[in-house]
Image (tube, rainbow, N blue to C red):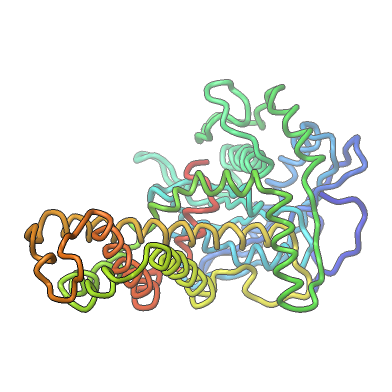
Length: 416
């Protein structure tokens, strides 16, 4: 959210739509058009501008603040393949910093898929303040009807409704099932000819949140200053970060990354049958094992963050906005919880092998043991030691199959 502030745009951008509100505050929205090869970029830009014009009145009325949509040049994608919304996140974050903008809307003509691999017309990320709209689903007709053109009235008003709906999500509004308002779960209505009204309760919430959205930014003078700004941003928005972490189900993320999980489990299946690993595990103190496990999880998360270049925006800017800082903090915390989940997964497998596969008295006969009694604590500690090696090998050797999957599962809602 912003009052008057200097602009740093590197290229001139068209004001596609604007509407004054009752309050002396303004939301600046950057509209990024991304099209596939062969698509008329000017036609898609005109569609995006019209959607902004149709949506701006409802947004200004619901929030009482001024709204201004800026339309930049179109960017061509490499192909028409389906994409996750997180694949646009880097460009959106870069545009947000250059603007500066309070939120960014991406309009594209390629198919968009959710975290459940379903084709959707649009998705939003409240934390990143990015919304992605795909015309592909809006234009798709039924079996007995051809694809709708962009200037079709149904496409026009469903696009405007979807835009207001997604911006509502960006501002923190939730779905309102079967209330007939704009925050009802979005479904394409071929008879739609206007944007549905905003429910009174939703309007009150949007009005309050719109006035509270911070637009802090900093010009850090080194890594330490940049890190401190990230920390302050996370503390100020601890609730939003915590909600994103809960919704991401981060500890279960390794189950969506088979390459990472395989690289972690495979070496431990060899190490668990190694006498040397048991010697180290049995003679290691509990505090040492816990510290080694914690350090391994942290190192693995940091390695993936920087080796996979998962920070945003990937272009280096002198200015860091609070939006991108929150995204970076959340992605790191998700990686940390994911590595913790990977550790728990490997640990559980090792414990099953220790308790079920190994003969009960196998370890008690080893000459390296001063005390021939092998207790449950010894098995747990040794399993934890072996699991830490698995976590490190998983991060170093397996990595992430897709750089976008972490931000995709972390930042974006799973339905419009």
